[in-house]
Length: 99
Image (cartoon, rainbow, N blue to C red; front, side, top):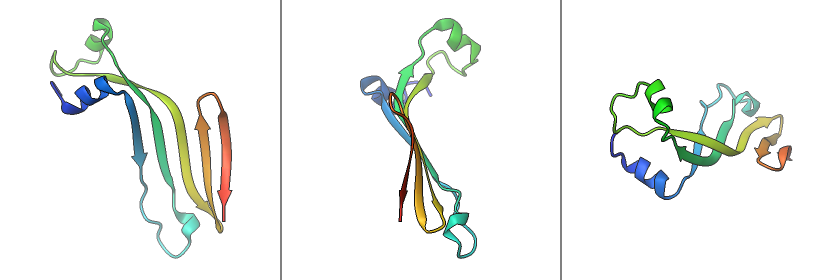
């Protein structure tokens, strides 16, 4: 969207996070829950004219950002444990389990 407030915010401070929630599980089994996902990183504005043109944006004033991920976390329930599979830039993948 041209002159979007969020675009101005990201230009000033590119840190961002997206939290994706899933539906409540049906029934009484908490491990039926699909889990939640968190993506975190930096939103970097794309300024290359050729790349912008390839997206066929509706307006020449529109903004386009790419996300450079630094962390991804999938949280869910397995049996009687909360399980988090986490990837972090420079660290790799690890799994955390809590009862």
